[in-house]
Length: 242
Image 1 (cartoon, rainbow, N blue to C red):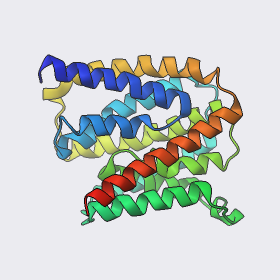
Image 2 (image 1 turned 45 degrees about the vertical axis):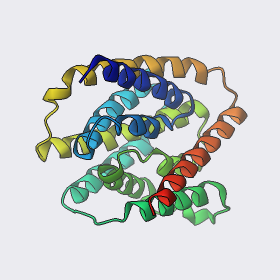
Image 3 (image 1 turned 180 degrees about the vertical axis):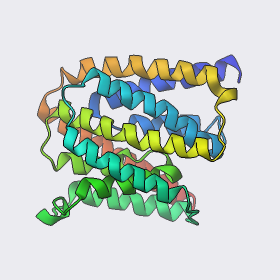
Image 4 (image 1 turned 90 degrees about the horizontal axis):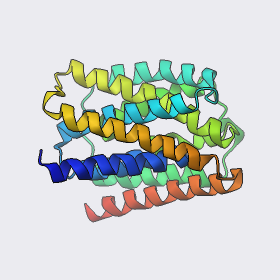
């Protein structure tokens, strides 16, 4: 890989991790959009997973006292099941319709009124972890899909960002393990991967400082606005591909 491409990737890793470190999401999808310009799909998903594993781990490290252990443990158990099933299944999905449908679903669960049982069913976090990790093998970044479930818990902004990051650590860890078992080799990308992981650690540190300066009300507005914009982007790309 040439120097210019490496600089773009490392710089993007830093900037997108600042976004995620501040509002808890968005950076993963933005980074995937950049990385997709440089890597084939077979390389993109596991390589992006490794970078996001580092990114989410750094957010947990910076906010270790804030994440919800109960939610994380239940999610982790579900993640193991989701990846175990997903790694054995090959899905034939029309990507354009998938993006449009997923965007509509995310918007509906984020902004439309829902009955109490929607978020309070038995084994909720086991199910969320399984579904998110299953889809993570296919689409890579699933942050917006699960975001509203954290909002429903009434978590404070620091706890929301930290808990979501802790759960995503298991999503990406299980995904990376699955791809390694399927034969993926990180060898040719070691240098740029190491630099990108270093960049996300720094970016999340900056994001943490910004998070401390954002009010709860402003945080939730930014959080939901980010979900809306990411879904809008997903729908536009899906419609264009029809």
